[in-house]
Image (cartoon, rainbow, N blue to C red):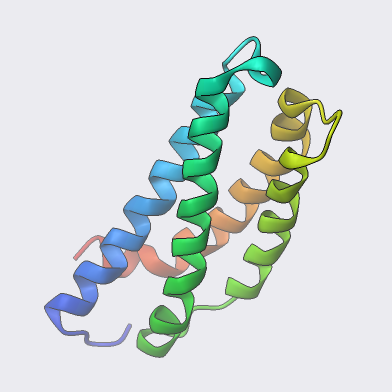
Length: 120
């Protein structure tokens, strides 16, 4: 584990909180019964898209601080997320079968790499 400046550790901790918030938002969405017609679901999902953009923007900086691997695999999560906007898409099924598992698999890998810095 590298020695990092306190501000760098804070940056990684905020990144971790962003991923945790995304995970909570996905869980919130999957529990909305009429998700395909829900304005709230669409608003939350747009927030998730914005969060995903922030995660992507963080990757170059984090990889310059620590040897973070597999950030490129986040692209597959983003590709799954993009399907939300396709006409006729069953959003509940998309979340349960594609987006959430893809995100959780990727996040689990990232978590193991950043937890030593987050726990400081």
